[in-house]
Image (cartoon, rainbow over all chains, first blue to last red; front, side, top):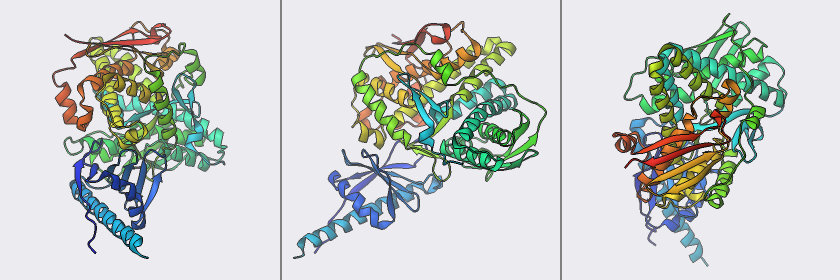
Length: 115
Length: 422
């Protein structure tokens, strides 16, 4: 069985600190609904339960913010990340998100296929 | 001693949108405003005199805050009071202070101090700074020791010896006994705030503004410093700050320049207005494009009136006053009013009636609101970078703001008329 493909692009986002915030544009925005469940097993915990955004923070202090009503996903790097390393850290975080979502979708499909 | 909880110490003056922290006037501002205003005072007075004023202002208003909070949480011993001071400093997003001092002085060690850290992030790669940036933390540390040990205001001198803004690895503040005692100025608290506000009024789009302002207030009630004492919210570094600090450094600097270089007062006033412009353009702009805003309100439209309304909601939630839209004609004219502002409360309480309208932040804010409404393409994912700011405003601002009514001058409300320059 082939693993589901997840595609996403990375784009610099507005932030008062250079290169700290990045937009993670999922090709299928509806997948953002599953992102929280996909990331929780990877060391993330919910740090904001305001209802209008879900903010997940990793033990490495990078954050993933999901807007449930629009499917927007923003990556917020730990502000201690040195400036020259920020783009690389954002790319690594994007890869983690894409892999986590693909894995989560594969697992969900396997669960639903099992008798 | 009771547990210190920031949200239980914060309250708003009903219908006036002025905020208080343990009874002390407070307001949310981000590092764009904080750095610009401090720099303005430096430019006006020179680094030495500026640092002296900023430290003194921080000491005065931090002293009031620390005393009020200690009373509320029933902190009684010096170690308890020092602990409360450090906790409140971090909770308000100013960074982490470690105080190792007694009545004879000592040291304050700062890490991730808001001013130094933010200055280093914003300018550190381009500019070499020669003076420390953390006068606010220095004054706060001095006040903490004075309150903890029952010392008179000004009896503890504070001098920042190393600062991350000067590329040091940390911030170190020396605290030494001083004979230069300071007089506590007249009170500027809740009672004065109630005395110097006008009748609250509604303006256009209230049905949009009021629920958003309420939602933002609820959101910010849960916002406090992280483990390093910094607050990142809406994609900006935010501080809950003491309004008295901003007001005293602004109005005392103007008074000093009136004495020493009266021909330069206009320039200083322009810079103080510009600090309001910088604040609203960058911070409000950043809030509007943040995921938190999108979640609370929805995607942004290219609708100038709605953008103005959103700015009113943000201003109210941040504790800047009951900003209302009195008139709006797209691409031509915007009239903002307020029955309350932290500037007018302070000015009336400390200085009485002004000869000219001196609500600099409100003036700059009104001008910036018109720019956000008309000159930003909100559906094009704008980024509020220094480059974008320069690109938009390098040739000046094609709008003019005139304050036509002012609480500081004795009017019941303040009003700024912003018109497009034809």
